Length: 90
Image (cartoon, rainbow, N blue to C red; front, side, top):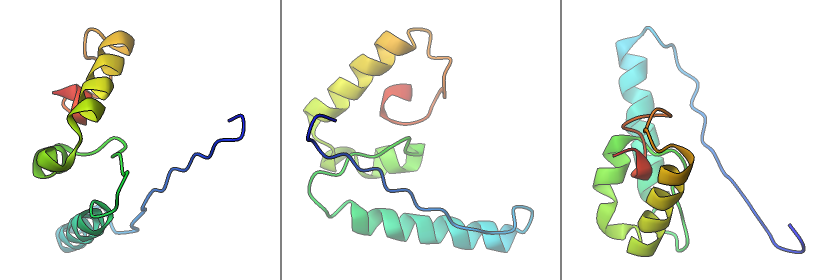
Protein backbone atom coordinates (compact mmCIF):
# COMPACT_ATOMS: atom_id res chain seq x y z
CA UNK A 1 0.00 0.00 0.00
CA UNK A 2 2.73 2.41 -0.97
CA UNK A 3 4.48 2.42 2.40
CA UNK A 4 1.29 2.40 4.47
CA UNK A 5 0.14 -0.22 6.88
CA UNK A 6 -3.07 -2.20 6.83
CA UNK A 7 -4.33 -4.84 9.19
CA UNK A 8 -7.47 -6.91 9.57
CA UNK A 9 -7.86 -9.03 12.68
CA UNK A 10 -10.60 -11.61 12.88
CA UNK A 11 -11.63 -13.83 15.72
CA UNK A 12 -12.68 -17.35 14.87
CA UNK A 13 -14.34 -19.45 17.53
CA UNK A 14 -14.65 -23.16 16.91
CA UNK A 15 -17.86 -24.68 18.21
CA UNK A 16 -20.38 -27.40 17.43
CA UNK A 17 -22.99 -25.67 15.30
CA UNK A 18 -25.91 -27.89 16.30
CA UNK A 19 -25.28 -27.65 20.07
CA UNK A 20 -27.31 -24.79 21.62
CA UNK A 21 -24.96 -24.55 24.61
CA UNK A 22 -21.90 -24.26 22.36
CA UNK A 23 -23.63 -21.56 20.28
CA UNK A 24 -24.54 -19.61 23.41
CA UNK A 25 -20.98 -19.88 24.77
CA UNK A 26 -19.41 -18.84 21.44
CA UNK A 27 -21.69 -15.79 21.14
CA UNK A 28 -20.94 -14.77 24.72
CA UNK A 29 -17.20 -15.06 24.11
CA UNK A 30 -17.39 -13.05 20.87
CA UNK A 31 -19.31 -10.29 22.65
CA UNK A 32 -16.70 -10.19 25.41
CA UNK A 33 -13.85 -9.98 22.88
CA UNK A 34 -15.72 -7.31 20.93
CA UNK A 35 -16.24 -5.20 24.05
CA UNK A 36 -12.51 -5.23 24.85
CA UNK A 37 -11.48 -4.42 21.27
CA UNK A 38 -13.91 -1.49 21.11
CA UNK A 39 -11.99 0.18 23.94
CA UNK A 40 -9.03 0.61 21.56
CA UNK A 41 -8.63 3.79 19.55
CA UNK A 42 -9.06 3.63 15.79
CA UNK A 43 -11.06 0.43 15.57
CA UNK A 44 -13.52 0.07 12.68
CA UNK A 45 -15.82 -2.94 12.78
CA UNK A 46 -15.75 -5.26 9.77
CA UNK A 47 -19.11 -6.80 8.88
CA UNK A 48 -20.46 -6.37 12.40
CA UNK A 49 -23.65 -8.12 13.42
CA UNK A 50 -26.69 -5.94 14.15
CA UNK A 51 -26.23 -6.23 17.94
CA UNK A 52 -22.72 -4.76 17.64
CA UNK A 53 -23.88 -1.87 15.45
CA UNK A 54 -26.57 -0.98 18.00
CA UNK A 55 -24.43 -1.58 21.07
CA UNK A 56 -21.52 0.55 19.86
CA UNK A 57 -23.46 3.18 17.90
CA UNK A 58 -22.30 5.97 20.24
CA UNK A 59 -18.65 4.86 20.01
CA UNK A 60 -18.50 4.86 16.21
CA UNK A 61 -17.36 8.16 14.76
CA UNK A 62 -20.19 9.75 12.77
CA UNK A 63 -17.84 10.43 9.85
CA UNK A 64 -16.87 6.75 9.75
CA UNK A 65 -20.50 5.61 9.77
CA UNK A 66 -21.39 8.12 7.05
CA UNK A 67 -18.49 7.00 4.86
CA UNK A 68 -19.43 3.32 5.25
CA UNK A 69 -23.07 4.12 4.34
CA UNK A 70 -21.98 6.09 1.26
CA UNK A 71 -19.69 3.30 0.06
CA UNK A 72 -22.41 0.71 0.67
CA UNK A 73 -24.91 2.84 -1.31
CA UNK A 74 -22.47 3.17 -4.23
CA UNK A 75 -21.63 -0.53 -4.35
CA UNK A 76 -25.05 -1.89 -3.46
CA UNK A 77 -27.83 0.65 -4.18
CA UNK A 78 -30.54 -2.02 -3.90
CA UNK A 79 -29.20 -3.38 -0.58
CA UNK A 80 -29.04 -6.97 -1.82
CA UNK A 81 -25.57 -7.78 -0.44
CA UNK A 82 -25.76 -8.76 3.24
CA UNK A 83 -29.05 -6.95 3.89
CA UNK A 84 -29.50 -5.99 7.53
CA UNK A 85 -25.82 -6.53 8.30
CA UNK A 86 -23.37 -3.93 9.47
CA UNK A 87 -23.46 -0.17 9.46
CA UNK A 88 -24.46 0.22 5.82
CA UNK A 89 -27.06 -2.53 5.84
CA UNK A 90 -29.69 -0.70 7.89
